Length: 446
Image (tube, rainbow, N blue to C red; front, top):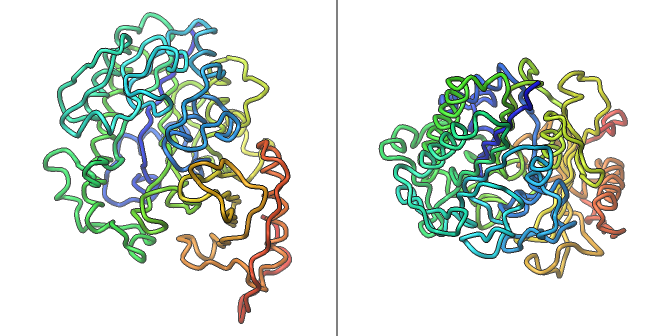
């Protein structure tokens, strides 16, 4: 039996609610919507670290960023890391990487800093060496390569060329786009020509409608970028179909984190809110066709073991996540229903997301660019996502929620210990009168 090919289509900073299957009414993602309907939609998927480099480190290494010192941008993935590329190489696959890496020291990433990928066409920080209509990356010999077209199209074209060149052998291809991330030097979201006007002033998610931030000036371009990405995703699926590879190829669509448009801090991510951490995630191909909508809580840490498991490759014991394959086949299979999130750069913080609640703690007096963790945290936020899905009412410290907070605090400490962060303490938030608010005993079931 032929080994299953794997293609990862990774976007950057894409909110989950840009997708039609998550309720967006603008028709931005017809190709991904169809894939979610026909394949497997991990409907409640989250980033464990809402910033570019650390999120990518999770996907490449299968561990939390604090475990390999990639807890913020600018820190290189250790060269001895056990990566997906090395594991697929060992199983007889050709491996290729195209696009943004963000896990090395130099933009022209040297061979020993590429995580073991055989084929290379990328850049460490694609936003620093390219623009929307000027795509520059570096080949396997660290030579600059300029590609024509809008940037996401240039990466899609390169991915299709790779697939065609490797169609006779099993391959693992990771395509990492910059879109719909902002263009740094402009602090703007440059869509393809003609795409932005049709989406400007249209539908806005309720959190952005309430808190605004930069969304009025940026959503049109952001949505236009998402639209073009979806077209690229459709083109790759078309290429697989035309080459007769669809039935033998697993595809994963995922992003690194979301975007809150400067509503939660002074930039676009790096917070524990849904707008930062909730992401779209769709799997297609063998083992995932007809999987439907999975409503168990999943996260980036679960995706490396999932890809290995689906390809029939042993998952290393030290990987921190779990393959979702069992719950795709059987929704009643055992599964832990919470997600653990580490936050850096804006603050040293941690979050637990359960099916109903969000609990966030932060460290005081720590440098979020120097300190990976802390020995002490203070309670910072508690949201009831059933009553307050857009996290507009922080109830941390409320007398009515004291028993619930005790449960979440214990769970947070347990997750910190599992992630190798020692045994820190969490200081309780000051007590706040609750007035009519109340939490019933049965609501302590997270």
